[in-house]
Length: 95
Ligand SMILES: [Zn+2]
Image (cartoon, rainbow, N blue to C red):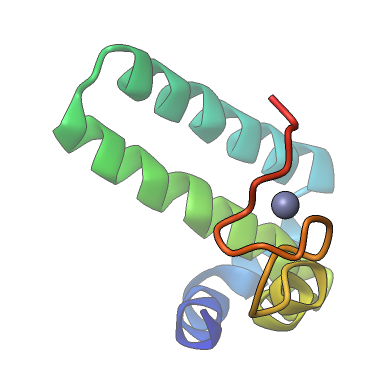
Protein backbone atom coordinates (compact mmCIF):
# COMPACT_ATOMS: atom_id res chain seq x y z
CA UNK A 1 0.00 0.00 0.00
CA UNK A 2 2.87 2.35 0.79
CA UNK A 3 4.26 1.80 -2.72
CA UNK A 4 0.88 2.47 -4.32
CA UNK A 5 0.41 5.60 -2.26
CA UNK A 6 3.88 6.88 -3.17
CA UNK A 7 3.27 6.13 -6.84
CA UNK A 8 -0.02 8.06 -6.92
CA UNK A 9 1.59 10.88 -4.91
CA UNK A 10 4.41 11.29 -7.42
CA UNK A 11 2.04 11.19 -10.38
CA UNK A 12 -0.92 13.27 -9.21
CA UNK A 13 -0.58 15.03 -5.86
CA UNK A 14 0.41 18.44 -7.25
CA UNK A 15 -2.45 18.40 -9.78
CA UNK A 16 -4.95 17.04 -7.24
CA UNK A 17 -4.10 19.75 -4.72
CA UNK A 18 -4.85 22.50 -7.24
CA UNK A 19 -8.37 21.18 -7.91
CA UNK A 20 -11.19 22.19 -5.53
CA UNK A 21 -11.69 19.34 -3.03
CA UNK A 22 -15.36 19.02 -4.04
CA UNK A 23 -14.23 18.17 -7.56
CA UNK A 24 -11.86 15.45 -6.31
CA UNK A 25 -14.64 13.99 -4.16
CA UNK A 26 -17.00 14.01 -7.14
CA UNK A 27 -14.43 12.14 -9.26
CA UNK A 28 -14.09 9.54 -6.49
CA UNK A 29 -17.87 9.10 -6.23
CA UNK A 30 -18.17 8.94 -10.02
CA UNK A 31 -15.65 6.07 -10.08
CA UNK A 32 -17.57 4.26 -7.32
CA UNK A 33 -20.68 4.54 -9.49
CA UNK A 34 -18.81 3.09 -12.48
CA UNK A 35 -17.49 0.23 -10.34
CA UNK A 36 -21.01 -0.51 -9.05
CA UNK A 37 -22.24 -0.62 -12.64
CA UNK A 38 -19.44 -3.03 -13.68
CA UNK A 39 -20.24 -5.30 -10.71
CA UNK A 40 -23.97 -5.31 -11.45
CA UNK A 41 -23.25 -6.10 -15.11
CA UNK A 42 -20.76 -8.81 -14.01
CA UNK A 43 -18.28 -7.28 -16.46
CA UNK A 44 -15.02 -8.69 -15.10
CA UNK A 45 -12.67 -6.74 -17.42
CA UNK A 46 -14.36 -3.47 -16.63
CA UNK A 47 -14.51 -4.36 -12.92
CA UNK A 48 -10.74 -4.67 -12.86
CA UNK A 49 -10.33 -1.20 -14.34
CA UNK A 50 -12.93 0.37 -12.07
CA UNK A 51 -11.47 -1.18 -8.90
CA UNK A 52 -8.14 0.38 -9.91
CA UNK A 53 -9.79 3.78 -10.50
CA UNK A 54 -11.64 3.73 -7.15
CA UNK A 55 -8.44 2.77 -5.34
CA UNK A 56 -6.42 5.46 -7.16
CA UNK A 57 -8.94 8.17 -6.20
CA UNK A 58 -9.16 6.91 -2.63
CA UNK A 59 -5.37 7.12 -2.41
CA UNK A 60 -5.41 10.60 -4.01
CA UNK A 61 -7.82 11.88 -1.37
CA UNK A 62 -5.69 10.36 1.40
CA UNK A 63 -2.57 11.99 -0.09
CA UNK A 64 -4.20 15.42 -0.13
CA UNK A 65 -4.74 15.14 3.64
CA UNK A 66 -1.42 13.38 4.23
CA UNK A 67 -3.12 10.26 5.61
CA UNK A 68 -0.92 7.16 5.66
CA UNK A 69 -3.43 4.59 4.40
CA UNK A 70 -1.52 1.51 5.52
CA UNK A 71 -1.13 2.91 9.03
CA UNK A 72 -4.79 3.98 9.12
CA UNK A 73 -5.91 0.59 7.83
CA UNK A 74 -4.04 -1.46 10.43
CA UNK A 75 -5.11 0.90 13.20
CA UNK A 76 -8.74 0.16 12.30
CA UNK A 77 -8.24 -3.46 11.18
CA UNK A 78 -5.28 -4.82 13.16
CA UNK A 79 -3.75 -8.13 12.09
CA UNK A 80 -5.07 -11.16 13.97
CA UNK A 81 -8.63 -12.09 14.93
CA UNK A 82 -11.70 -9.84 14.61
CA UNK A 83 -11.57 -7.24 17.43
CA UNK A 84 -15.28 -7.79 18.19
CA UNK A 85 -15.80 -11.58 18.15
CA UNK A 86 -12.11 -12.51 18.60
CA UNK A 87 -12.48 -15.09 15.80
CA UNK A 88 -10.64 -15.54 12.51
CA UNK A 89 -12.50 -15.56 10.20
CA UNK A 90 -15.01 -13.19 11.82
CA UNK A 91 -18.27 -14.78 12.94
CA UNK A 92 -20.02 -11.53 13.97
CA UNK A 93 -23.71 -11.65 13.16
CA UNK A 94 -23.95 -8.33 11.37
CA UNK A 95 -25.83 -9.05 8.13
ZN1 LIG B 1 -16.22 -10.57 14.22
